[in-house]
Length: 318
Ligand SMILES: [Zn+2]
Image (cartoon, rainbow, N blue to C red):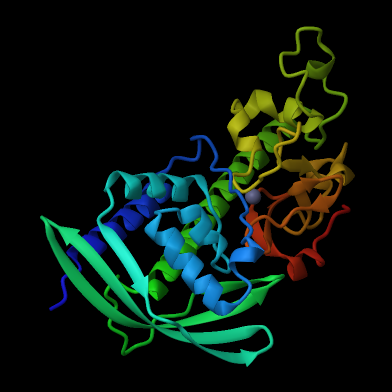
């Protein structure tokens, strides 16, 4: 007899966390993603990794669970979900039998393991047994669990380790998408700000030699030049920061103006839709913060996520 309501409730919490992340307005404090590294001493073999994962899951420590999953990261949102887990109390217990590990090659393995989930509900213990098929990959010195796609004939119950692994990665993917969207909205506003600035500068792009910068009461004097120039038009410091930018250094801005356009007249451009106006990164170096892609704002005002291969074809000079 299967009773997994509690687990489904738990997964519901996970889903809730995701929908909160999507509903988040772009002006809210950015979610700073913290990369996590598996502790090699816990994950020297595929079996170690599976046991360590179950141990951490039972301790409701999602940060260390995520560290054992390839492609998962511990973000402020996962921390929030972890908090909700803990508030639920100690009502779930995962147990595994000895995993049967089969090496695919030196760096990949698959394992079958019988997972038992004990759920304590109203003083009654319910038992849920699943045969888990797990995939693992060697990343650096540690073995990590790999999220696999749901098979057509698979009965998704929310009670297997593979499903928890999937949630940790899928959740992260959803957040990545939300962050990329916020980044693109930032870029859109920055481009509009640059356009207004150009209008006020005889139709020329540029961030230097602006009167506002020379004024003694310039209230933005501590910001990078690009931000100082655009700030009067966008009026929000928040949009200078990509939510996926984890650099905690002095730099308040995640974006830069393409200096090749300094002093260039807007209507002088033959192909504004192909020329970079604002990019993610600095000193002409792009930062690929969104799953190998970077946000580019073009001189006609349109914004696009660009892959590393596509970035090589970008036009930088008028
Ligand atoms: Zn970004």
